[in-house]
Image (cartoon, rainbow, N blue to C red; front, side, top):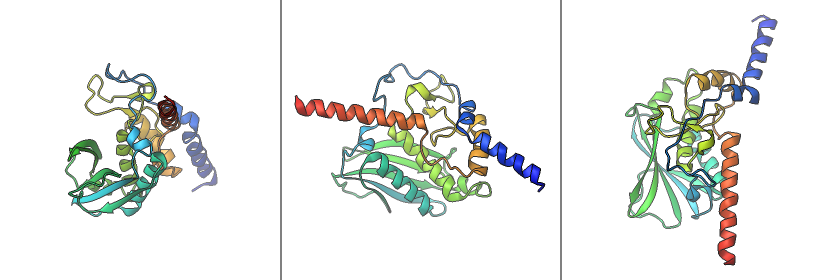
Length: 245
């Protein structure tokens, strides 16, 4: 490749991956459901964002398809431990018949190619306990491994779905893809966020930011991190007031 052309590509990649470019490629916010809280801590999940239990355990079940990428699961566990302020690990197998009272459970189901999307998040009650569920369509990632390493594609999906469980994003920087239909869940307007949606703007930004600069979407954006910090401060202040009353 000619040196001038190479320099131009590098310059474009730097510009496209800058904070200014991230702002330029933001999606537009949409209204949220009327019942959505407008004040701190919004819809953020106290159980997953504070040391409400002794540990977070990801129980990884292979339902169909090829084996999970261990590195992707390690990345998710590290992120969960950092935001949850306690140990987070993963183990392979089925959800135990008896749930440990000191553990917060996240059940990850690798379903092969059974979904019409990359992943899905929801929760269910098991013996009266809330268990968070992530389903991941890992065969879809394999089709894109020519573009990005499969372990990073898988990590991005896992962290994206975990972000839904964290309650991100707040209403002030979120949007619904099919508004006024709220069924698909809220996503972050910022293309440099793991909770962004792969729409045209995010894909254009991501081509340079991820494929060229190799800055993978394996964490949440500055706005989402700020919201988490505000929610934590609110909960800590509430706890202090409760103890002093």
